[in-house]
Length: 205
Length: 329
Image: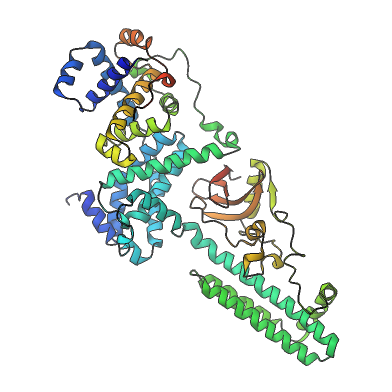
């Protein structure tokens, strides 16, 4: 049986085809979950956001007009759901009573910088959490969902140049935080000249 | 960080995404430090893309919930009949978010009938009490028991009618209708003979509280607790968990005084009373079950349970924003 493309499945779902919707959601589930995971940070918040996103997609697909790809649309909904979870987290007065088990381990200051030795996903979570949401979202949409600059600009409603600069700054900051390098000497040299994230130039756009 | 450094970083990033011109490409490839920066960013990208997939059980749970939401959407809306409702120029994702807010939530499907049933029952009880009081007054004034009984019967019929109207006005009226029917039946069965006399006798002491102008004090203001007094006060996650665990078996404020919830017109109720009465508890999608309203950390919240993850969640009654959560004991 030939695999139907997204547009065909969307059209079928909009005609009331439940199986088509099921296929669509399954096809994009992993990326939707990954977006939520990377943007929201904690596993539980990501799970909540993912559930919210799927329900929003389901309830709104009849109104999806196809001006962007289904993926772009769905990932944007997932991004917003994850950001909502972040906002909720900030408003929780008793977060520590629940989240203790999910808190990342403190980063070992002597942690090795080589990529092959960074096996702890929490390190990446922590580095991502250090980014502003604007930078994080742009980077996640590019590197997790593989949207191109134009699609990200469309999804976030920001200029193309802003997308480009946010992604670059986010990557630079993450690389700094993770001290990733395949040529440690070069990195050490360059990192010494790198500014902290806060000292980076303000987004020109 | 200098502008030059930022430019180099931007160039390396653009190169990684194949968003460079031929000249820029040549510049990157001719500069070892830029190549190294590209490799760092490539490593970052690989790490980001290497997200741990969700557990199969979680995925299936999420998908099932989404499809269940789909099943609850009215067929006309589901099949795209309302697709053109989004005006031109409105961002589809924004419309999606707005639609989600206004669409009936999963929890609403289950809670509204319960709330309606509760209100209906309260309205009927209130009307019976009022009828009893009227009966006492007629009895005192005229000593004509048949008239009093007639008035009481009429009030009971009004109560049943009121309950029926309430039930029929609700889009999700099947359970409410049943409740109204059951309540009416109950009133009728207790409305004759000794039961009616007993009701009159029980109501007699309260008759002294009625004013001399003949208007009936419903007890909504005088009898009802002060604002927020009727809410359970919770000050810690542990108390929240206990509240939820205790209330899980009896959702939606089973101990609320009937007089508080009797009025159909909620215009005179305070915000807290409305919450207590369950009139406008929000439809919070995160809550699979609603335990009831409470005052948590000074905030009026609706407490509910997320069955999928065994969580107790307290959400603001105005916006469903989560205020606290804790594991269900």
